[in-house]
Amino acid sequence: LIVPWLLTAWYGIRYENRTLTISFISVASLFILASSFMSISPTYRWTFYAWPCLGCFITASLILLIATVVLGSVCLRNFGKGLAQYLYASSNLSSSNFTRGVFERDVERDVEKSDEV
Image (cartoon, helix red, strand yellow):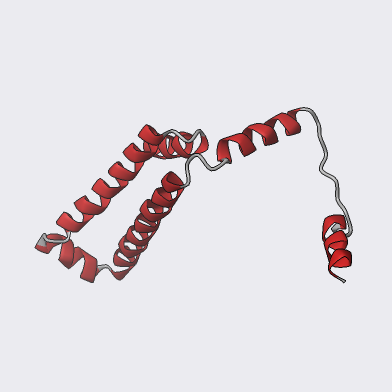
């Protein structure tokens, strides 16, 4: 169940697919909701307090899950702002053995500074 959910997130964000990304965020929200309903059970609460290590893992997983939903929503909001084009160009350049140039100084910035003076 986890692997398809994570693949949905990866494909949804990578290819800017709104349907997959919304389904990923929805399933993550369902996980948070299910965990919230489980906390109502007295057995769950007893396990949480009796085994502090398990309680720590549960708390950490919920924090990470909430962060995942927030960051997934941010990514969804930023769809259509150039990620797909950037990744497409980057993959084409890397497949053609294009090496990025390394420059010791920024020539454009030096030109702007000389114009200001």
